[in-house]
Length: 124
Image (cartoon, rainbow, N blue to C red; front, side, top):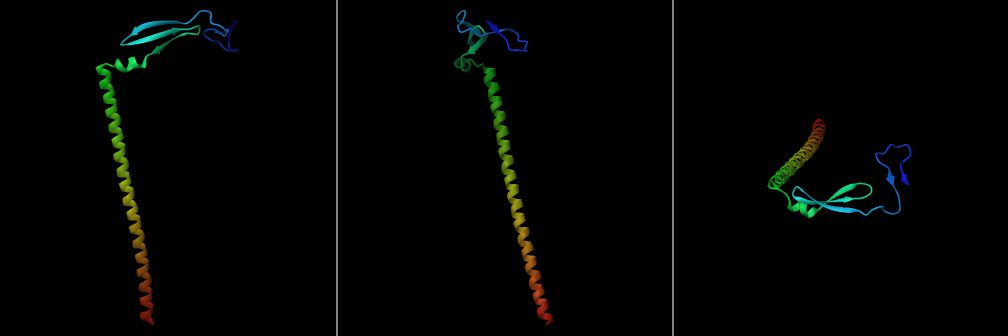
């Protein structure tokens, strides 16, 4: 007995019988440079493509496109790597400047303290 979801308007009714009414059929269909299997079931036909055929059936244009894509990806990765290195160098320089500023501030404070000590001893 065909069943449908309640309150739905499906394109076709689903059949949930325990047994298939007729067996699946396989057809070999040549498609561009590969062999594709079309499997017909009660629900719908669908294609199953061989992975080996896809890998071996690439045209020179496809391999050029793949090479171009890989080249662009490689260039982007190298640009990102260069940007990260330059940012790390800038961060290191900023840290060095911060340490230098802190040392200068400490040195100025020490000079002021020594100057105050000298001025108090001279006034005595």
